[in-house]
Image 1 (tube, rainbow, N blue to C red):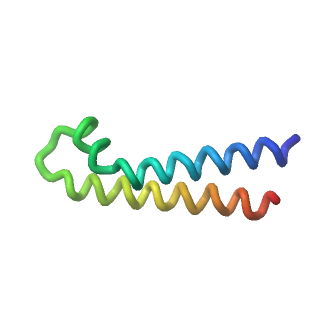
Image 2 (image 1 turned 120 degrees about the vertical axis):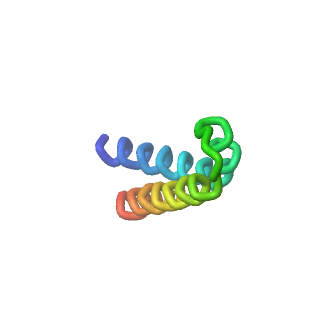
Length: 63
């Protein structure tokens, strides 16, 4: 049961991370209203990469 929950958690984290990497520019335009959006976009891409790696490691060590 716990393996299934961890597997689903890993898939969800990886999916959210990939979405953050892919749509960082549009998310930044919608959510943040300040002038320099390049730093916010870079931050979201880094966060997405970290979430993807954490999700992938959960899946890797769970299986």
